[in-house]
Length: 242
Image (tube, rainbow, N blue to C red):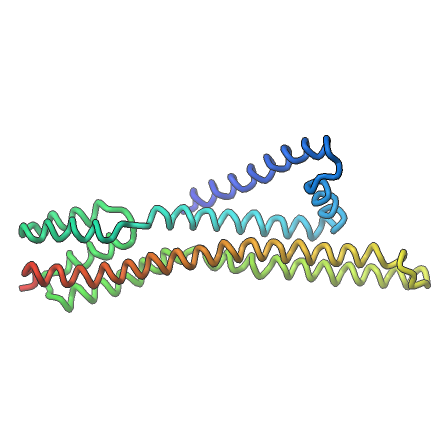
């Protein structure tokens, strides 16, 4: 888990700096490019808060990539798995069915294995094992989502904090100069608006990934529940319960 997060974080950092280098070279040819403008706005927004927002984006993307990789690995063809298990059970090979479930990666196979392992206690014992271990697997699937939610919440807050500080700076300049002309307050207001924009953009990007991950988890959980119900029916059909 930690190695995967570290790899994802390293990937995000390298991708960011790689993209920065590529776009910077393009921007040298075309100074009016979109990246050049984005870079200028980032600097104008004040590095103190812009760096914090950027860190939230990089860390949030690292956790998102880790979850997406993990969930893709955890996705199992439940119909094929159940068919393989039923073939073993039809031959009276309970141990072979257990081996099929044990050797298949993913939370669904792990839950089915627990159901098969407790089949000697009857359908009630198998169902109880499936429900209990299913809760454990759901917790593992949702691991890391709290950090993504944290970065989604923090990024706009940092942007709003930069907005407040920018407005305070603008009023400080008004007080020092004794004039409320646009040229006096424009700089502070510009910083305030830019930090808000970058904070919101970061939150929007992470929110899209978060919703995708949640939908992916829901799909895996639904398949897990269907497979668990199917397993109990398969065991009952093949006379596993005594």
